[in-house]
Length: 195
Image (tube, rainbow, N blue to C red):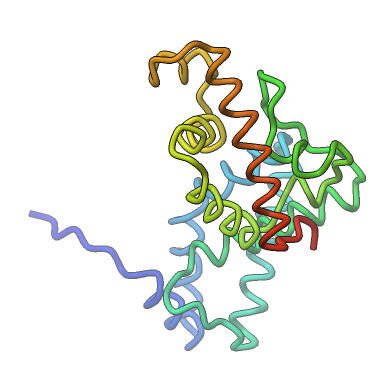
C-alpha cells in the first residue's frame, strides 16, 4: 500500500528559501493548472498566458530569494495576487480592453465606473474586490441574492428567475437596484475602484 502524503506549501516555501531548489518545482507543478486557467480567463490568449505565468514565477523567485515573503503559509493567494497584478500591467502596456463575458447588459463595473472603463477598473485588485464583496452583505436580501447569483455564480437572468421563483423582469429590476445601492455604498465607504 502506497502512503499518500502531501507536503504543505509553507514547508516547501521554507525548504526553497533554505536552498532546496526542487521544492519550488513541486510548488509550480502543484499550482500550475489553476494559475494558467486564472490568467487565461483574463487575457484570453495562450501566448500571453504563458508569458504572464513565467513572469509570475520570476517575481515569486525574486521575492523568496530576497527574503520578503511573509504570507503565513498562504502561498497560493499570494501567487494569485502577483499574477493578477501582472495581468493588470499587461492591459496597461497593451492599452487593450479586457473582454468580459456579459450576455445581459449588466456589469457591476460599468455602473460603478460610469461607463468610462479602463483596464484598471476592469481588473480591480483583490483587496477592492473583497471590499465590494463585504458591501454586498449590506444589501437587502432579495437584491443580494440576485447580485450574488449573477456576479459570483455567473448565472443568467433566466436561471436566476427559475431559482428565485420571480419573473425575469423582477430579477432584472432587483439587479438594477442592487447595483444602484452598491454604488451608494461604495461612495459612502469611500472605496476607490482604481489604484
